[in-house]
Amino acid sequence: MADAFPAFTPVTLLTGFLGSGKTTLLRRLLTDPALSNAAVLINEFGEAGLDHHLLERIDENMVLLQSGCLCCTVRGELADAIRDLHSKRERGIVPPFDRIVIESTGLADPFPVLSTLKADPVLRHHFRSSGVIATVDTVNAGRQLAAYREPMRQVAVADLLVLTKADIAEAGQVARVTAMIRQINPDAPIVLGSDDVVSLMEDMTTGRAEAMQSPGGFYCDDPGPVLASEHSGGIRSFVLVSEGTVDWTAFGIWLTMLLNRHGDRILRVKGILNIEGEDFPVAIHGVQHLVHTPVHMQSWPGGDRCSRIVFIVDGIAPEVIKRSFDAFNGLGVAKVAPKRVEELQP
Ligand SMILES: Nc1nc2c(ncn2[C@@H]2O[C@H](COP(=O)(O)OP(=O)(O)OP(=O)(O)O)[C@@H](O)[C@H]2O)c(=O)[nH]1
Image (cartoon, rainbow, N blue to C red; front, top):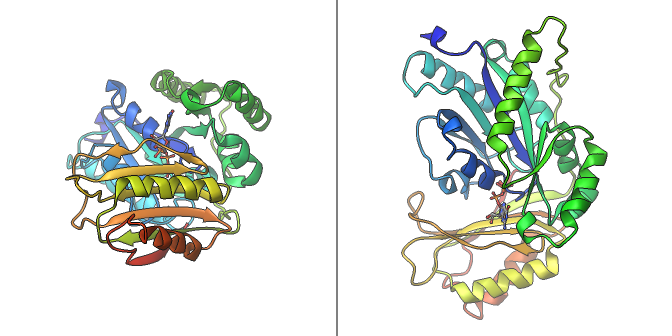
């Protein structure tokens, strides 16, 4: 059975800072027939994880890695998950995937993730990194690259850089961000999210395979020893959980005002809301000062119907946000004030 598969299954790592559009890009990539047999591993924060629901593909080859960061706390779990997929593929228990795509959290350092593949005695014989794709948020990259080392490292390691949100960026922002990331990564192709990313992914995979096979070819896939990754100090994550329904208009005003005022310190907000009068939940996304268009979901993921809002912040206490939510609640944002605030591990 094992012979039916290529000697090395390519593994693509999709990285990019918080809210830069990884899941959105992945959702589009997975609609391409070239990736119809890809297995997907998703790592995201917290119990309010939404990404796998927004991908609208749930099957045996879709693995959700537990809450925690891929480059730190769940690295062992990543290796276990790939080994498990490999063994199930050999036994014919899962569809025979021909590629793995890993979507990391926005804070993951790509180096330790790549090292995991190289360091594991089983994985190294069956899987090869076929490149790192990093999404870069055209609207927010200037601020993010200046302030945090995670997006710097993601851009530096990338083999392909995908500029997202060019459609809502101001004139000249694409050129400015391109110049900025060229300083960090002089070689990797830079494309727009709307470009043909799948073909570039395939070229990357072929290019790497050829480089490995050619006797004189030079191929560097060794990111060095597995190092513990350190995240920028002060970044923390928590979730507001509310059992009641939410008034959409009031919530929109609250979120807009909150990001207006504290957007520099709110790196990412995403949530799933039980909106008054709606049968299904609405997913909301914000990145720094930017509030994205809400997404109406087709079903409730999981059992309960709580509204959950995950925040990833730097330099602002959860209590400040909870107090602000409570204050707005007086004006009718939610029927029930947040039941609890849970700290998550970035
Ligand atoms: N207008 C526009 N919005 C985008 C684009 N790419 C992503 N978004 C929006 O940006 C928000 C965040 O996108 P996600 O795909 O969830 O970002 P992510 O990188 O997976 O987020 P995390 O996993 O939380 O780090 C969503 O509301 C998307 O709809 C784009 O190219 N244009």
